[in-house]
Length: 149
Image 1 (cartoon, rainbow, N blue to C red):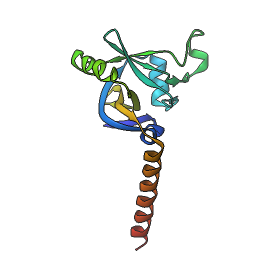
Image 2: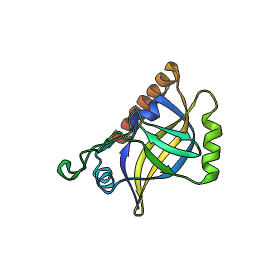
Image 3: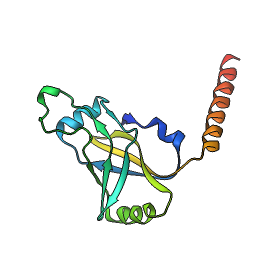
Image 4: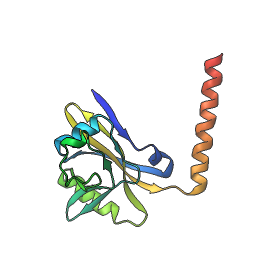
């Protein structure tokens, strides 16, 4: 059973997803509890591949219980992602291409493990964002009219 804990809703508007990936995240115990409670944000976060390893940068996980959190804890610390060698090689090559970035989409449970879903994405132009919003509004109106009939 999969349960979504944190979602980056702005990513769907800002980026066009080309390919999605799934990775485990290296976390402290109190960070895992905070994620399961939904006390995190992925807005402004990104995935970076350096020296054959992938990292989640810019994600903020607030402490679950402030009193039980170490004084030196940084909520915005860089977290290592757990990926296979083949995936890392593919991501290194793809990220080096000019206008592509790795954007985190959501954090969720897969059985007892916490996973991060992220995508190789291209930033949308302003007119593409407008078209996306227009399509979403049209779909919502159609759904409403069908529901009322």
